Amino acid sequence: MSMRRDRCFKNLIGKASVFFASFFMAAVLAGCEGDAVSEFFKNNNLMNSDDTFGFAKDKKENDDSDKADEENTEGFEQSNDTITAADIEANAGFNQETSDAGDFEGDSSNSGESDSENDNSGNAATENSDSVAFNADGSDSGNSGLGASDAEGDDSSHSGTFDPDKVNKAIDDLISEIERETGRTGRRRDVEENDGGQGDDSTTYFSDTFQQAQKEALGLSIVDIEGLKRSQQGKYAFEHLTDEGKTLYVEIMRIIEKRAEDIVVSTLDEEVLDVVCQFVLADHPEFFYMDGYTYTRYTVAGVLKKISFTGNYIYGPEEIAARQQKIDAYVNTCLAGAPLYDDDYAKVKYVYDYLISNTEYDAEAPDNQNICSVFLYGKSVCQGYAKATQYLLNKIGVPTTMVTGKVNGVGHAWNLVYADGEYTYVDTTWGDSSYQKYESGGAESQKLPLINYTYLCCTTQDISRTHTIAETLPMPDCTSMRNNYYVREGEYFTENDMNALGSLFSRRYADGSNNVTIKCSTRAVYDEFIKRLITDQEVFGYIEGSNNTVSYTTFDEQYILIIWLY
Image (cartoon, rainbow, N blue to C red; front, side, top):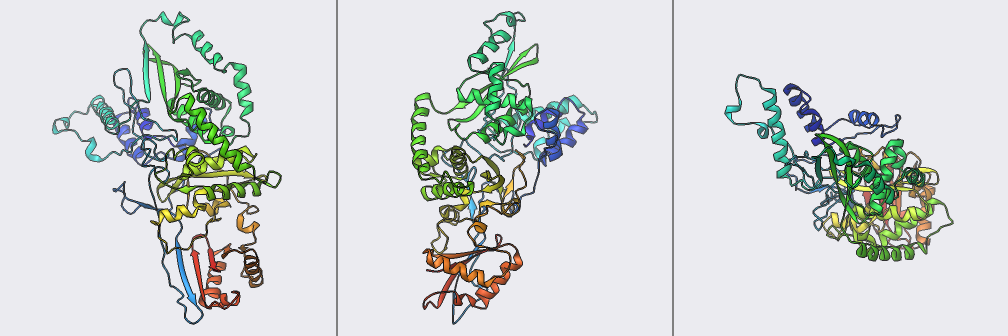
């Protein structure tokens, strides 16, 4: 999880001297540390004691951090070259860096949805309500930062008398101003009980009897909750919560399922509510009809007594039913050809191939942060790809969750898959050549395979070369190469075995492929293949026919060489 900057402020203001408030302001601006996050979860009985959150630096920072709207580079560093038997330039070609756009690679059509990694400003109190626009991916509707000049008052505020209350008030006012400027409205509502006797009346919202009757009608009695917990066993995010966290998880899940409003939940902590809601959404791609939530704080004499949860449901019942019918039709067509009796690898590859073959990467696609974009319109961005992959694989018994993170500072989403007893990563978006073409501006000069298998069942080490995994949810260290595509297809080389390479060329000619892909285990093996096949022109010994020209593509970070046969 990521502790939000706004809540770090709220924990400080009123509890520390100006010295500590100022000190921690600087710390918060730099971001909360992973140890503090893990400690917070454990103290709130939400994370198991042996779990920790991993924090990693972005692999590549933007050159100009002050230009937030400037395009960020993302994708494969790629070279396309042609060699001839008579004349070859060892270093010919170009490297192309691709860019990313919008939330989880862009959503100009849905501006209310933003990256899960966006910075968040604080909650403001305006009379009885202070509100925040809050998205389903756990992000707020805008980014904000604090500069030194923002915290400076006029000259009259600088005097020889040190007044902690005045400075703390100034900090509160600053946070409130930032909240107003960033448009964070509509998320939180405060309700104060004016009459102390109202809570005894079973018809009032402050009544425990009334609240319990509401929950039981929704299927959240004590017995119901235990049954819901059993139904969620095996879900990745769910299993990373303690029993108290699991109770809150199924409460939120049930409220969303029933599209209920203003239902009291079993926590008084807003941060806990936020994180567990994100865990629910990580496990449940079927909640396409919710893009955020609001919560209400019920207080008596200023003391918080209850918090209720309401999903932000973007469609009515009829529209939800109509969309679900179309989703079911797509899923039935897709899974009709799935290899249901093969191993998990075959199922994962089938879904990977099917989605890529039937989906175009399009940052302007409607509903591109949920499964509707893929299943209804056949176009999406990374979050739509990831949720669709998760939805289909879960349908055929391959446990899958969504992973969020960044590539060169840009929000991105992909999947963690439990295939044949081992965890592995799958990034369907990066497997789609339409994504690579989009990111390169549609350049036709690039030669790309229609389906790129670099991110089909890969390890943590491989994916970390280009992806930075977010700290929202603890991830396992995926080390097995058993189900890696290149291993399974005989294209993975741990040494420069030229006989095995010859067999690979023969197989690709026999099956009609237009390329031979060579994935190397180390840089040394990769460099040696480049030297022998390209620089020394040994590739012509494997080419059938009278061709005296060969094109090739290299992916240096992934140690991949593609030789084009046609």
